[in-house]
Image (cartoon, rainbow, N blue to C red; front, side):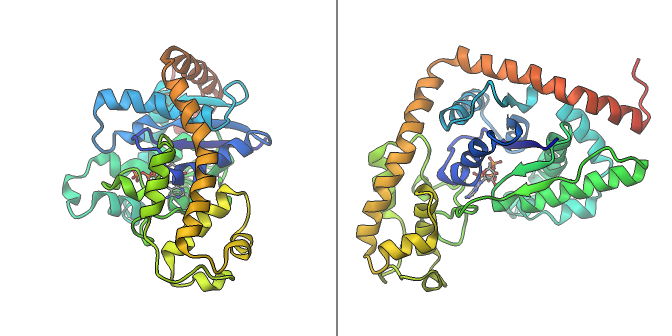
Length: 332
Ligand code: AQP
């Protein structure tokens, strides 16, 4: 049976890119698949997290999942550290994946930056843990944004090597699901870098918790070029900031770039930004408000995570029994 797994890091500043590239698609997929959605707290600590903020961010992200429309009774909603199978399988994958494979991961290079020697070992081994997250449940499909494509290819390589090395057909070869017109939302300040939680400029992103005034202000200040909007998509070539805003509009309106340009081609950015603000506030406002309401009830959130952890362990338990048997571990 097809099974979905996907995760988001509780590293704060949950933004429009996380929503359009990932969380919104999670909601759509819950109708068709058995889904496990994970707050990947162990991934978050690959870079420094203040413990108090981390606790808050885990609950806030869980609230965002639910506020965006995920049904905790229909899906498994859990946090990674509450099912130790993720860490156990990650260790086995540390022994399957090759150094050469990890050396090619562009996200590590970007996140470690110039000071590579000082990056945590966890940041380097991150893709092995991500493969374990997915394969501990034998998930078959993983909805993600474009930026995660390389990590998913590594997950496929790990599954294949494990199966080959041990002569088994234990792990599925997962398929990425990169859905919708906003698979890579770019920074509002720079159309060549992706919108990201860790960008030091808050004006670079729209946070899910931003109120209407903040959204309006950030979009008003968003970088654009002096030309009006084109009427055809090829008129966006070489105009990354314009392409980004049009892509965001299309995604929020559940429309397409072509359709948005048919309606707004020839408009000045000042007018287009007003229209974009209106739709962004209409779509994100209710999610932000519901997140706030849920975060104010940590007992409810913790209950959802506790239930999710029990259900998650029940799914990964038989997979791990098979893995331990295959590897040759003695379990008494
Ligand atoms: N800009 C984006 N556009 C579309 N999708 C995006 N995603 C992230 N940024 C964009 C998707 O969101 C999901 C969760 O991401 P994550 O929390 O695991 O971490 P990330 O990809 O590293 O996201 P950030 O926000 O950019 O964090 P930092 O700043 O820490 O690197 C994934 O499915 C991702 O594709």
